[in-house]
Image (cartoon, rainbow, N blue to C red):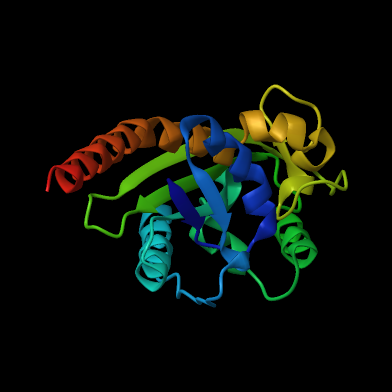
Length: 210
């Protein structure tokens, strides 16, 4: 089965594509399609926003679409920036990272968690799949490392002394919030793929019998 990633964020695509191959899914990068889709992320939750994006891409391309919505929730900031993480302030990832650090100035409670919700929407009205992944950690005092994207340079996952940006993709793709969500949605996709395989075989037998 081919599923389009409802995003033109190549960093997300790199983190996701290899995870789906073993279950028989070819993940198509949304930026390589001939459509340009802008979705207003008006949902109040990661789940709502992920479904909004997946539905828009599925309807536009007539194929299954997978979307991710994620954010950083900081305990000392009451869970902010949360669903607004990518739009907390105008500018680049670095601008948003420095903004968050300014909000955390003097805070002793550095607890935080990354949350990722992945949704898959199918073109034939099959019920959508939704799975949430979480990675808990703390906020560093200063940006560290050159890898990753978003808030990776200031997020230290529990059990490590390095930020996601320092740990690199080899570790991040195993322990991150998105890694957890990918694993969960992949497991949910297995019976769906089996269902589609059986249905395809039945259609083939029907055509041959005519």
